[in-house]
Length: 285
Image 1: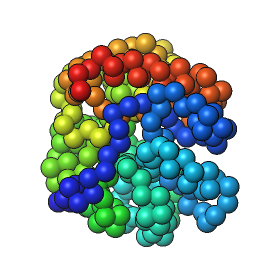
Image 2 (image 1 turned 120 degrees about the vertical axis):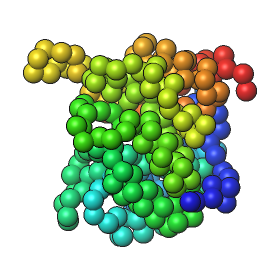
Image 3 (image 1 turned 90 degrees about the vertical axis):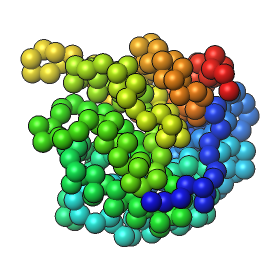
Image 4 (image 1 turned 180 degrees about the vertical axis):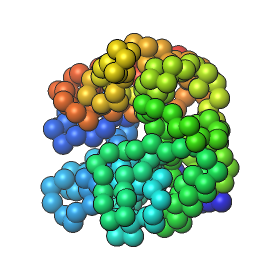
């Protein structure tokens, strides 16, 4: 099991935003309550150029979280050695406060699928995911956070709940967790379960970061409401309420506003960060 104390850096318990280059000037002029930024690792794996220069400049003012989307932590095959090496180079160069990835798979044999696909929660999946997380943590020399997915179906093969699965992964690997509150709401709506019950059973003491984002509404083949995790809209009021419920149990945590599609002008994103700051201000330190 990885010893997280060997790399004790962490994000501040303040709002952060997913960094987009069109917001560079606004962030350097007046970031408001934003104290940290998150980047997608795969967007910064090249050498040199303006994007890396801007990122280096921002890293002198803001804490940085690196969020991976391409490791395929839940994949049946081995991790891509070249991808992991590029990630190690980026993390070594940037020295971020946090690194996270998704509980999902996105590769099969030599093929990469541009999506984050779900897993059955079985003992075999625990073994595979734990083995991959241990490899990542040993390669990077730091703890990683694992993000709960958004779900659209449940596997008949699953032998345990998602929260029990995550708790077992934490116990086996020493990793932390990234709690995506919007994903909790999306999954609970789609699977007809209670989001508050999910939060009550979640290992909140392992949470190093919280995500908030928007989602789209659709209908399934039976006409039932189906939510799609899209990161393309403002956070809805029920998700803000679920955040309040979570913080009342977890205490203050770093909160990220994710907005990756149909990215708005800075004032709209800043208003979401202001609302996260207001939620945090109600929680005793």
